[in-house]
Image (cartoon, rainbow, N blue to C red):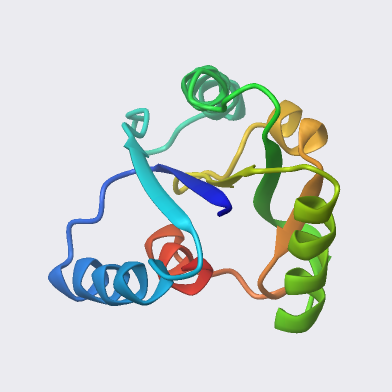
Length: 143
């Protein structure tokens, strides 16, 4: 069975997001082994400079990288990623599994996104839409 590790920057605080995620986690149990890791989002000043944002993203990327098991296929969720239908994504996952992949890591950044190096190293950069969604809602959508 495929092991899926969802690595998220930031914690779900809102009850409605937690309840939606719990419902989808329950539904997915028959299809994969799902593990959700929440990492601490770096604190930034109210009006951060680009250098401060870049430094925070780099620190978050180091924490994320430490949680990606060796041999995993990585999917980075980002707005500039490729848009796939549900069927196309299922085909991609099926192809990976048939070629020996047993571990998938899906990365969801915090409010400033993901570090560019993480996105570049991912086997798939995936976008839900050209629209921007809150990262907490994206977690529900990924599940």
